[in-house]
Length: 242
Image (cartoon, rainbow, N blue to C red; front, side, top):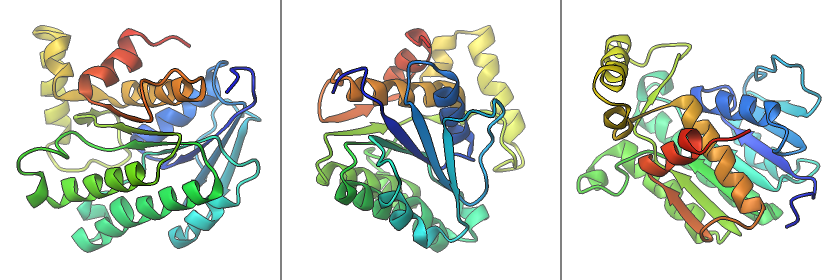
């Protein structure tokens, strides 16, 4: 695809920690999509009042796959950072409906509508020795496998470690202490030590945007591209340019 061709990117999960950074990165970068579309339960933040943002707000998540396939213009790329926690969802069954089932339905709807590229924010450890026994890893793994089977022009998976950033609600009581310890390792020992198991949400978002742009420009290393933590840091921080 020509780099000058107008493109549109749809974000699912634009009000979450990583998703909000993906949105702000797309809206503030002059070299990314000409239009940014979102589907969410509530309106996403648009601090720059960018005219490039076209939000769709609908609290009924069951409608999102249909809404996605009917977006005009049809997005060139869909980026999903959609996810919740077991506590927020009210149990593992409800979390599965969001983290797995809804992401799978969205990927299928995107492929059927003709979306070229699908980017998914997954998690480190989905292919580890114990991953088949951990529900969270099973959810992410199932979505990854679905995206790969759908044969997009490019299926891109990011597998970050611990995601650092300011959340609206803490995931657990010790979250602040944990983040402080991890960031302390980065400051006092080596940023490389932190990079091995934790990344800032902004870095993950930038890596997702960069990878999507590379796919649209025909510069992705392959149809199926998995970015582990080291490559996320490389694209999202070390080599990041607006």
